[in-house]
Image (cartoon, rainbow, N blue to C red; front, side):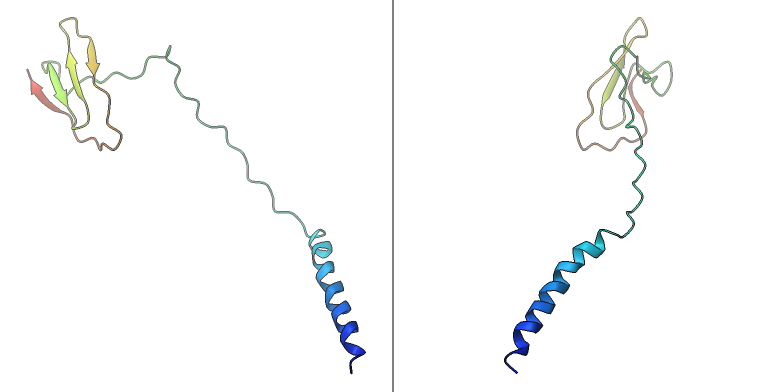
Length: 94
């Protein structure tokens, strides 16, 4: 009986070494297609400017930012907060 024990351990060791060799022959998963990331708008490209609820509104807010319309119809807005959820635009000054 004691002579069989080393043979058993050698057999188990050989089986353990065969696992990676057999796994190398398995087919690979197909690679996921790489989609190009959306390119950010360059600073030279003007973004869509907010127009406001109507043309008579001089200042409005959506709960995240405040926008104002100057006398020459130029619109300027504040920055949006990091965790803000915008609501519908609401006129605050006419």
